[in-house]
Amino acid sequence: MARIISPDMIPKSLWDNSKETLTLPHAIIDCWKKLLGEKDLLKEATENNFRGEIGGIDEEATHKHYSFNYNGSCARFQLAFLDPKEDLKEVSDAFVKSLAGYNVFITDIPSGTGAASLSLLCNIAQLREENIFPLIPLNIEILAGEISKSAIVIFQESFNEIKEYLEEHEIYVQLHTEIWDVTDDNSTLQLINKITSLSQETNDKILLLANFTDF
Image (spheres, rainbow, N blue to C red):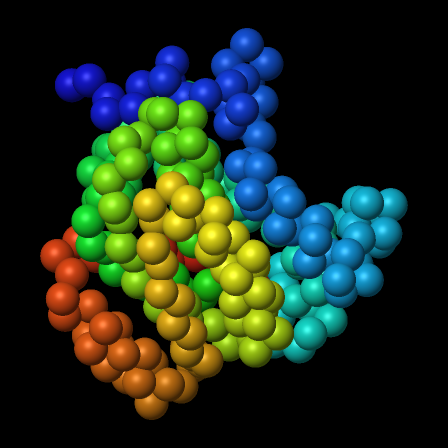
């Protein structure tokens, strides 16, 4: 069965097939650099090359992951969405079908600083910008569940930065956040109730379930 977006349709601005090189959407890069600068993290992020930063509950752990591993988290999701090497054909096609237009509800847990959701949104916008996706109005509601308050703050700040760009390409997003502790049954019940309440009016529902590295 033919792919909805075959590898040869992916613009070179996102994937260079000859070099097998992935490039993040320009909106994510610009937003990330801006927030790193505002949080006095840009110098450290560009001068050091730490690995294995997994994030955490406190601000320091969150900032370390955002400085050094955020781009990797974005890229990991982008590879699944675009699937340029055709390793995840069904997953990629399912995303494309759900996100072509109209109304979608996304649960992003644990969301961290929003790498998965923001990567998804900015990839769609850039594909529309480059006339790969049609400009059909797309209304998305996102519920981000995350234990780190500082990570939620960065997610919200990032979303505020790209919101106007998304709307230029007919992508209209409402972001809801919920402090969620997976070890607390009451916290999980509250999250489930919120998911149920917010998603009632949407037919297409997506669960972005990130890994709980070293939680």
